[in-house]
Length: 597
Image (tube, rainbow, N blue to C red; front, side, top):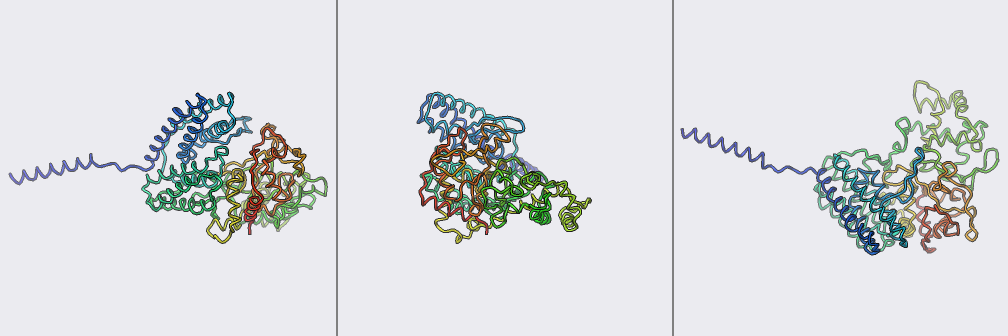
């Protein structure tokens, strides 16, 4: 009986212990859910600042309070930038998009800009009754868009892989845009706002139990930015190499340690890239429409053969290489190339083809959406090659050497050439012209002997005081914006017809306006790459400037506005840069380090 009682008591104890273990077990937090919850809390904080600080300040027209609450609002936004840019890209452009009209050509739509950057222009210019009214409308639109984010976020299920990708891309965003003044040209709050963005990343890493080995560098970078009170004094090159790149590497190591996979985010970078400046950062295939346009060694070889051959021109007297000389970074050194058979000169300067594959629009007026389309246009243009891809196909299919090269490159059942294959082979060759072999690249990849103090000073000016990096985005130094590289920009600079600063007249070339007659596009031209720029003189779409010194002088004066050309739609800031001769020399010294070796 006693034995049975003991068994009963023992069984009851086991049962109670089991029940307690079930109900008292603390549920282990899921990091991705914690990040999402933290975002909701942070979003409420931003909404509160907008509702209770910014809105009343604008309603009272209190300039001091407006500026203070505006800066506080955007600092709160920057802490969440990694999340909003990644999960709500369309809404992010309404919250902090560029202050220029967005034109949807296919739909004939013009969307006026809205958000923080529009507010900044209104706040940091001379106030007027009209500007206060406009600012009040902007604040109210901001309230609506923040509510939209909150509503969308309720429906989202996010993964660890997405979060790690989001903070990886935010490091790249800070590198290329955040420390350049790109989205705060008037307030010049890039450095504290970059610190705020890093603070947001820091909080994410804490949710993933990051060790001091990673958190300390983040904290150190934040302190460094907050201590640097002068926008122009930050050593941006050192900040990137000594702070941002090690942080990015640390994030990648933590991801691997936690067995979190990479994910495809839509960026044109490889999904596992840890630096914008590593040699293999870009996935060239992400710049094409679909897998049928993927690059291969065989296509490149065929494209190079066609590029240097006259077989594509009906007269058999001109090749692509006639105007794009490899020794001059695939330019020709002329103001404009002569037309076929020495006829009239072509409309515009011959641009470099190096790194052309890493952009989203082609020709100075962005009339072609792909390199394949560009090849079609050039071959058929009566003043360039005066050719026909259909006729060229016939000639190729009757030539055993060319036909063999096509068979190797495409290896399909037809075993013949066709116009599309010609276009694609040429495009593949041009896409291969991305060596990233300059002294600048080698320095950013760790070889600190490559650059001297003058060249490093030039980079810091380029990315800071001179504001070059806010249009020529690192690391491509063209108008294709990091970190997604989804769109190539055009700018209205006010380029003159002649290199005359006393009696300057706007060049008659209307740029994008000729094909798409929107007022915003008048005199707009693609922002070309500055890689190999020392080899590609003369400069601008019309080749008007023979030296980099002349180009820098133009920008230093404020573009066209600075030499007396009044354009309502100039997108380049009309304010003088106030660069000294020494600073201009340093910038040019840096630009020369972008030449491939």
